[in-house]
Length: 510
Image (tube, rainbow, N blue to C red; front, side, top):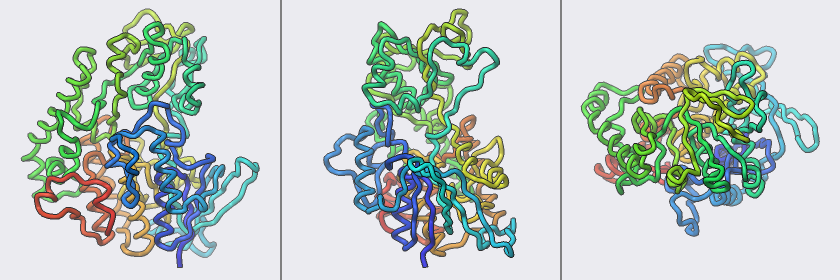
C-alpha cells in the first residue's frame, strides 16, 4: 500500500518529488505558499538566464522543446519549461496553493518511544500545520513521510549586521534586498531605479543581473556601484578556449584527479598523481575567463582557484556586456571587506568620503539553514538539522538526516546543475520508501556525512559551509545508483565511460 507523502514546496524539487511519488504508487500532497509553481523561477530579475547549459539542466524524461535553441534560456523560457513538465505529468491537481506550512511535528503513539539509535524504525507520523493564506484558516494534515523542498534561495534574506547607529536606520535613502527587487514587475523595477544613484552589495548572480539592469536604466549619468568583498571566477560561457566545460570537469577522468569521500588507497594514489592535471585544467579555465572579461585590467582577478570556485557551487554566468559597462563607466566596482551606512550613503573600507547613494540593494543571499530550522516544531530536530555551527547541514547522501525519521530534504544541497541532481535524489528517496534498500545505522551514516564534510573543507575552504557536491557529480551519483541497485556505469565502452561528460539523459533508465 502506498504511503501518504507530504511535500513542502512546488519548485523544481517539489514537482520532481510529486512525480516520482506517483510513479511508485504513493499518495502525494504538495503545499506551496505561493499561487503558482516554479520556486525561484516563478519571479526573477528580468535579465536572469539559466546558469548552466540546458543540456545539464533538464528532466531526464522530458527534454527541452526544439523551439528553445539557446544554450542558456532566459527565465521566462525556464518557467514555461517547468510549467510544461507539471502539465505533462498532471501534477497540478496534487498541489495546494497559497498554503503556508507553519511547522511540522513528528507524532509517535503513546506506547511507542522514539529510540535515538533507530528513529527510522518507529511507527510515528508527521503532522503538518498549514495556513490557507486566502481563507485565513489553519488545518492539520497527517502524513507518513515528509519531503522538504524549500530550497536555499528564497524566504529569509541574509541581512548584514551593523554596529549601533551604522545600519540602514541612519541612511536617508532606501535599502531593499534583492528578493524585493525581483518581486517587482519589469516596468516597476526599471522605474524604481531610474535616475537614482544605486549601490548593489554582492558579486553573485543576483548582484550581477541587478547591477546590469540599473546600468542600462541610468547609463553613465547615474552609474551603478557594485560593492563586493571577494572577486569570483564568474564565467562568460561554458566554452573556455572553445573546449566545453563539461569535458573538463563532468567526466570520470576529471574526477580521478580529486580526492573523494570514502575513497580507497588506489583512488587516493591516482588523485595525488593526477593533481598536476587538476591544477593545469583550473589554470586553463582561469586564463580564458581573464582574457574574455579583461579581469587584470579591472583588478578583478581572484586569489583563489577556479577549482575552488566550482567545488563551492559558486559559479555564475556574467550578463553579456557587464564588463563593457564597467569600461564605459555605467558600472563602478568597489572592493570593501566591510561597509556601513551614514546619512548620505555608504562608508567603505579605506575611503574617507562616503559613497553618496539614493538606493542600496543587498544582493547578500538567504539564510537557507534558518528556513529549514524554522519548519520543525521540535527543538531537538531543530538542533539536529542545523548540525555544527562550523559545518554544512548534515545530510546522508545530501538527503536524509540520520536522526530525523521519515523525512528527506531535496534541493538544499547544491550542485552545478540542481535539477539533474534533485531528480536522481528523488528517485533514491522513492526506492528507499519502496524498501529497495535499507539505510545504514546512524553511526555509519554520520561517518559518511563526516567524510563529505572533509571533502568540502578541503576543496571549498572558506566556502565549505555551502552544502554542495561540487565537481564530484559522478562519484556522488554512483553512490545513489549502487544503493538503488542500478549499474553506476551508464556509458557504452571504456573510453566513453572515462571521457564523455555525464548528464541527465544518462539516468533516464535504471
